[in-house]
Image (cartoon, rainbow, N blue to C red; front, side, top):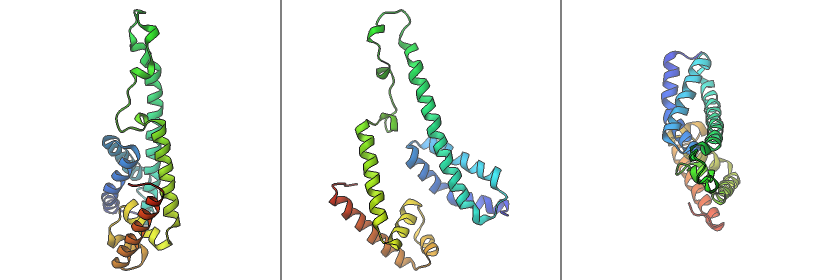
Length: 191
């Protein structure tokens, strides 16, 4: 069972990575900070008595669920905003025929709602291509790449997790990034 010190040390060690992951998902620093704080509080309240070895997986699941909850709330909030935005169009009856709800609702720049449908489709297709190319990488290269660049682990942590030297991690990461860049360039994608 994790002590208060072990739980505190664990939360401190994952805070930065969790924040980056949340920012990547929601694209808003303030919302990402709230999400990470909520996830940390939930872990401490509900699972603080679990063994230290179980905390990383529990926290990752809690963080993902908290991000999903954020998107559900945003969807409901945006629905209500668009439904009630017509009340702000002036109650005198003049100009009602020219009123368009979509013109009065402005999405925040950089938010998913502000993207055009074409941008959303293009982004989704790009992500699917990147995912497919990552899956094609040799196992060790894929492991090193995901640990270093997705999970934001440093070279020493990755080497310890993979059971190899730091030099091997650097080699695997270098080969993986070059292979991905070449494969994506061949498909017309430049990041």
